[in-house]
Length: 259
Image (cartoon, rainbow, N blue to C red; front, side):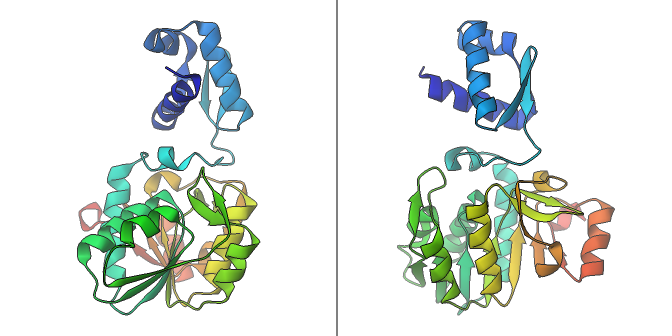
C-alpha cells in the first residue's frame, strides 16, 4: 500500500472516530509504529489532525479542507436525507447556483432523479456538471476560473467575477462549520469568496449542512446565519439552534421523523 493511500485511510478513520492510536494503526496496516508516526506527522503538518503522544485527534478548530473524494464519503446517509429535502425547495423554471461542496453532489443526484422539465444551474463544481450535464431539462452554466483538483472546483477571481454577472432566484450552498456566535464558516478564503459572491447574487439562500457541522468553527467566516433564508439539515438540531432560527426568521427544515 502506498503511503498516501494509507494516510487517506487513517484520515478517514479519524474523521469517523475523532481519534486514532499508533499501536492500533501499526497492527492494522502491518507497518512499524515509526511509519505510522510519520504518517500522523504529515497529517498534522497539513492541518488535518493534532498529533499527540501515542496517537492523534481530529483537528476541529479550523476545519481544514479535506480532499473531495474523502468529504464525499463522510456521512452519506445524512447528505442523502438533506438532498431529498432540498429538491422539494426547487421548482421548474428556477435559476439556481450550486456550490462545489460534497453535499451538493448528493443534491445533484436527487435533482437528476426528479427529472425537472426546465432548470438552469450555475455552478463552479465539476462534479455537479458531470452528474446533471446530460439531463435534457437542465441547462448547466460553469463559472470559469482556476481548476482546484483537490476540490474538483473552479475557483479564484474569475469565478467570483463570473458569479457577480448573474442573478439567481435560489442558491444552494454548504459549509465546513456553523456556530452560534461565529456564524457560517469554511476552510479557506478562496472558498469563502465564492460563496459570498453567490449569496450576494441570489434572492434566496438555502444552506444545506449535515448535523456534524453544528457547533464547529472553520477558518474564515462566510456570513452570519441571519443572511440565510432556509437551513436544511439531516437531524433535528438542539433547541438552542431552533430558537436562534426562529429569532432570525430562518426557516429550518429537517426530516419529519426527526421532529
